Image 1 (cartoon, helix red, strand yellow):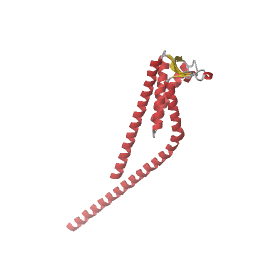
Image 2 (cartoon, rainbow, N blue to C red):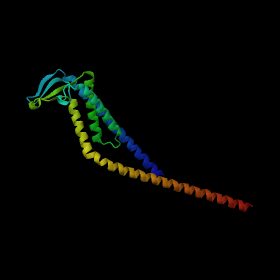
Image 3 (cartoon, rainbow, N blue to C red):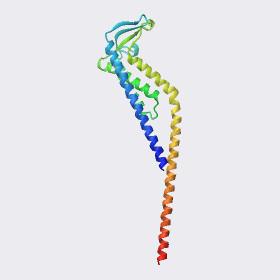
Image 4 (cartoon, one colour):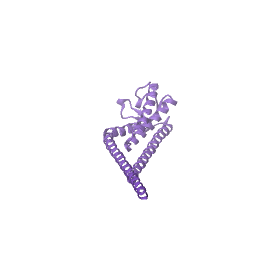
Length: 217
């Protein structure tokens, strides 16, 4: 029983430690992504200069659409959709039992970046973009901000997680569940054995008492 208690206690402590560690990483990345996006937007608003000739430049612009100017004029729809997606991301993170580093990092970066653009839409009515790709004139020289870049990175990491990591987790969960069931069954059998031993001891004590009474008489 002591061994079983020690194993259960250690497993619980390890799980609590991992849960706390992933939560700290998640919150830190959300804060970093949001802060980095806001700071860069404030620095490069109303700034215009070339970074790499005919390739990349800083060109402040107001984006009333989606990523890289898509869905122009649908700011209200994009605001509501962004809010719902961010709520879903928060739910998925806390709902997921077995968290990995790729899952936590991808979710944290994507959430912080999404919050940065959502804040612009709510408080300004548009998103502040400033990085222009001049080498793609056929695509209209797309313009974006750091939130778009971080969001893309976060989505790529999450795609890697769901395609290559998450498919292995259900098998691990089944294996862990079987181990827990076996430990529970073992504990129940040990309790039954102890109870039967206690009952045997009580019956032996009663027998001894009755024999002692018979001797006295």
